[in-house]
Image 1 (cartoon, rainbow, N blue to C red):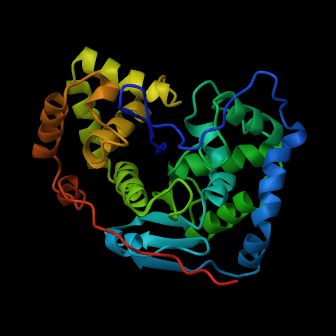
Image 2 (spheres, rainbow, N blue to C red; image 1 turned 30 degrees about the vertical axis):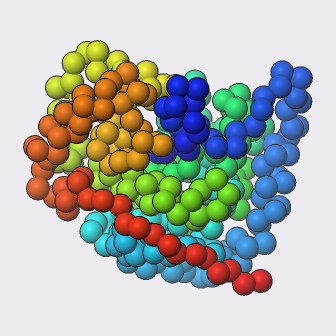
Amino acid sequence: MMRGPVPADDDTIRLQPVQSPVRKTNRPLLFGGLAFGLAIAAVGAGLAVLDRIPAISIDTETEAQIDATQPCDVKVSYFAADADIVVIDFPSLTIQGLMLDRVAALVEKAKLPRDRVLNDVQLNQAIYDCGDTIESYYYGHDYKAADLQKFFTLADQEDVKLNAHELWLKRLLGQLGWLTPGANGAIITLPAAGGPITEEMRAVILHHEISHGAFYTIPAYAAYAEKFWASLTQADRAAFTSFLGSEGYDIANTTLMLNETQAYLIFTRDPRFFNGSVVNMTQAQVDTLREGFIANMPNIWLQPMANAALPIVTAQAVCGG
């Protein structure tokens, strides 16, 4: 997953929302999930059109092709280097959040249950408690097929009322064949540029999320990331864990810790999102860790991307209506 940057007092970048709300202790919680209801109403008309389509269109695109476009509607693509990775490209942070924030709460957000799906009131409370909004809970998402299966199975068992965006995701997973045990696949997502998201940030988010996709779909890469994590000193692991914990990740999940470490350390080459200060290291120390990781990476399609410069993007969405 990926959080959004904001300057801190010490000039480092904390992965917090650019426009995070000012929290007040006397601010009432919106009753009955009203915050989600209003947001759904605001964008539901566009999704209703999608729901009438018998089959969801899925393209095949490279990283550069995704970077070069700006979606006006929800867009789905197989990632060209690995068809087990499916990219959902959203026209806004709002639609992305409505579709996936509840999944995030189940899979990896700290202090939330791993064995039940939150209803609207509980989810709204969880987002409020960490000072976020629907849009800023995550700026990019990534989930393996098994976690998505678990989400929808639990939601069905508990009769949790899902919104139209989540039901659209369930239909996509059914089309992909990912709602059955043993499916190998990963969903990664990003929003279009707009609001707090610049075109350059969008490219950084995609690059970060692609590495998560590889972690989920290529066992050799996951094993390598695990080995790298074990090779770190206890102090280094503690530093990364502290950083990730401050961003709301569940630090009790070691797999999550090592997965996010590889994504931030290797594939997030933008100091606005990640730099040595956030893990109490000098940039030279970070560079040494990064170089050691890349030097021994498995020979897979992800390897060249570890040193690749992000493209200069100038794509603009022209959405009629």
